Length: 128
Image (tube, one colour):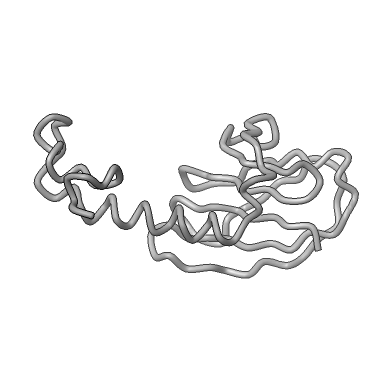
């Protein structure tokens, strides 16, 4: 399949969409990250759940799995009401593509999280 026929590639639409000359690498990086998470989480069961995080950015299978985006440094709250379970914790540092394991915890209420690093992060909570 040629790039002109590939719906993911905007090589020939770069001028139409006003994309900068160096658009390809950031797009490839973003698509790679999306593929990484699509394989890691149960994407078919997750729904947008802005209510579940004070950041407003969350995909959730309530009570089972949460993927929360924190676009800036600082603490944020996650609403786990009714999710009385033990959760595994992973932090994903977007700047470096690094996964940082967190300590598992049990909870069924709102809880504050503080990222272990500055900048943009994803918090992945999965029922153990």
